Length: 441
Ligand SMILES: Cc1ncc(COP(=O)(O)O)c(C=O)c1O
Image (cartoon, rainbow, N blue to C red):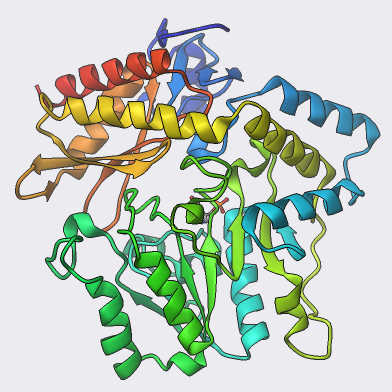
């Protein structure tokens, strides 16, 4: 499928997809995420022969690119050897993930989604500390399970009519500095949101000594790719230590090279007590991990923790694909490419701001970037409809992007596979530019 630019030959949608949509009770206007006939590298070819650039890595999953030959081979080889029930390779993966997250020697609760490992972490944190309370952040996204939506502060619509939710989860302001809730600037605020946690929250409605854990994303992803200022995570770590609370770091979106490091917390040098992994871990084979140090588990009570059984735990296909994914990230230096090509892409997007007044801000690390869409750059007025129109215009041109955001704002997610080259970045940015012109003109 070798391709540099996208190729649109019919529609989109073309006749095959259009017919399938009608059969599913949908219309052509519902086609905004390419259906896969074949996916390779940074490209997705749909059933009508349209080739899209996948600028979101299928929601930050295809970090090694779609269908990386080494990952495909590992899966096929494992299929021949059996594909249900755990094998020895699970323990080798446990060691690798323990090393990657700084939690060796560790134990892992395996699952198949980011949502589920957030649920596990709620259980583990409560069980280990014997405390019921949890602190989470406004704007956070932790999944769609009942625990995931209870932890999340992404958007009220994800909770509406699903209550009662998991009790004793308290949301406090994240360092979403673009529209600071305290109307301050990150260089001079003195980390006002963490002052608020210590001086207001702990002294009025949350008792820290009854709080088991703080759940945090190193970079708030779906909220609009907000990167906290330096010292923010370090201070949060200290607050947890001061009160005996666990720091649960949700790296589901940010790990495996996405931000230019194996885990995003490495940017701050902060060690979580429990680290959650998923998404890109096996390049698309569903597997996720709640990683806990063995010392933490052993510190609890004399009974072994009766965690939970699952039919599918560390599935052989997931484990094989995860090893191959980590090998590719290591051997092809994808953390380095994420950092280097991410910096190049960020610069190209910042340059676009000269001519595209609808861009309010560009932020992010490595190849996890957000392009904030606004009506007015100075006033930072959110423009959610315009963000949708830009995504639709991009899709028509063969560029697959999405927009997301909390706090009333909307940012376009720019998170291509980590194998992307500067030449491919140039093409993608050109198509984005044309799409913005079409949407605003
Ligand atoms: C930080 C974070 N945690 C958890 C999840 C939920 O993962 P999943 O969709 O695999 O359940 C997501 C998904 O976007 C996420 O970004």
